[in-house]
Amino acid sequence: MAVLFMQTSDSNFYYEMLKYSSKTFRNYCFARGIFYEQYVGEKCQNMPWKAAYNRIYMLRSLLENNFSGWAFYLDADCYVKDPDFDVFKYLSDKGKYGGIFSGYLYGVPYNINSGGFAINFDHPIGRQIVSEYIKEYEKLPKEDLDNAINWEVDVPEDQYMLHVVLKKFVDQYGLKDYILFEEPNKSYVNTGPFIAQNLRAHGNVASRSQAIKEIADRYPVFNDFGGRSVILNLHTSHPSIKTAEHGKRYSIAYTDGNAEKTALWGPYVPLNQGAYELLMYVYVSGSVENGKIDISMDIASDHGKNIISQKNFYIEKTGPSLLKIPFSLNETVSDLETRVYTKKGHKIYFPRIVILS
Image 1: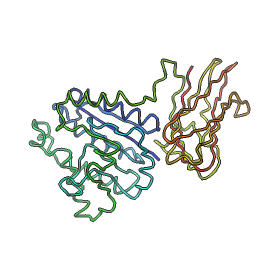
Image 2: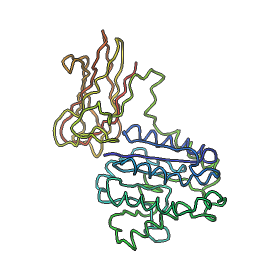
Image 3: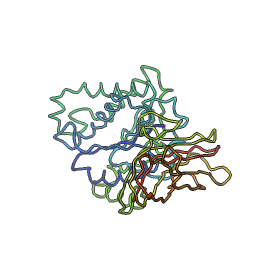
Image 4: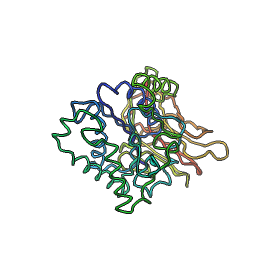
């Protein structure tokens, strides 16, 4: 399942807050192979609040580049509230929806909080929502947008425009069943158990930023290599990683647990003589049956004929884990690969392969 998280802010006013909130999302995404994108600046220029429209440009880019999967947009004041939340399990039964929104402000489903939402680019309704959102934005006369000084007053703001679009889909098109509007404080795309938002009502920018920083500093970091040299840092969507379960851009090497199989193999890279350690990032979705999960790994060259190192692992928990194999090369190899073997019964993602020296 392809999943992308993205955030944006202006280059000054909210940038400090974004630095701290993005830490929670970047670490969350890194451990799971979820892509994270960020834009800092004002695509409309000349006023910090106009960075609120950046989300529309970012969504348009995904649409134009045929992104396939779920895209979560989060404001700079959003952060991961539950770092153990299983977003893959949450999305596993949401394929019928084109989008998920934190709605029901004042009791109206499509009166939403645009600070956090998810769009399913695999669904025609999801792509249509983005297209209509872009059209609504493009109705703004450029001169009015350039001259605008006061947010919400001089020109329509981003949340209002998305509200207008969703109202049309519900009242005019009759497509409410294809959009999931979650209740306030119970939504998993914002202001709920998974993602929280430190709103303007909670204080000034400095105090809100500090509060988010304190939360971010408590969370685990998965991309800290302790100052060691990184020889390879490869997301498993790369074409050099082979697996029967994926193949699209933004996808992750994955086994659905229905059969015993080789989950992945590759990437067939050259590597000089020396001492190394291979890190295999693993994410177990759902539950662990019978108390443990068996995973076997080996490192090989010469198209798998020369086994350099191998190890069996037993995972006893859901969520992210890190499997490590130290190995040494007595001579340069041209096609180093790792192979991962799994048993039946568990949904497992293999987001990333790292080689350290």
